[in-house]
Length: 351
Image (tube, rainbow, N blue to C red; front, top):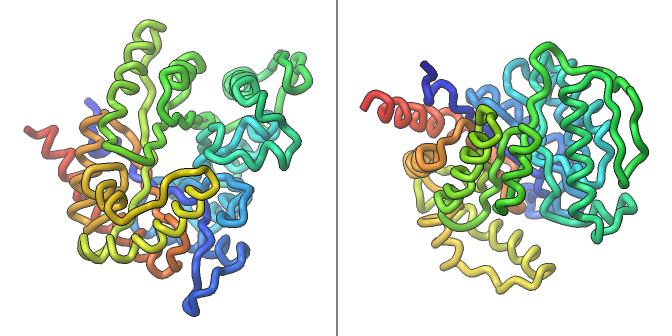
């Protein structure tokens, strides 16, 4: 019989947010990237299971080539799993994505995994010469090809967004355990059904509101698996958060950086100004997992129970928060939060 506490994977995600140095200046991207590698090493030392790096093509995030940074992390770690969060498959070539991840899997001793998605920004469409009018078709076709590459050694495929393949074998192949692949879903029934259709893992990206409002999507996933005669795969979530010694310390440390990040993005998208009241509401009742180790652990355990999760990823970098504060939240999450979450889940099982 499986043990939910033992089977639960607790991870960290980052986009390599451009952070501020001790003098308050914004750091260069190369400085931030080196910090990300250090943070991943600390995450392994703290006992965490996964580090996920997101792909962006903007000046406020340093990571545009996650697999390269993950390769650097692989050389300095031995246990932690190495994932993307997400790989923007719509504007990349599935064959090259597969090759990069298979190579990472090989050099890391089978630790690579990928979260495939459309991405939350659209800069990659312009940068790589794609048309936003093809948004849906690009992702559907490229996910179809990637799923075939995962399972078929010789692939024949045709579509409208890239040249066809005829009995092609793509090298290198993943190791004996295969390559773990998730699909990032922001919350539409069609996206959930797509995950079932391609028989991949479901990763729910929750950035606002009570996480348990996503329970209908979990139920839809389980029902669709049953109807398709497929065994459900592990379900995960990605949420933002921050851990400090006390609830007040976490809120005070995170608020200015959160406000700066969401204020900037909100101005681009025409959102209403971010307010402290809205921030506090997300902390207290929503998807912002910020607080003391005890507070964050209770909120994680509630989410794991309510959604039936096998994986929980905390996006620990949210705006230009300095590297030393990120290091502290990583240590608290791994050394204090994670053991408490596992104890809470084990208590559920014992009861």
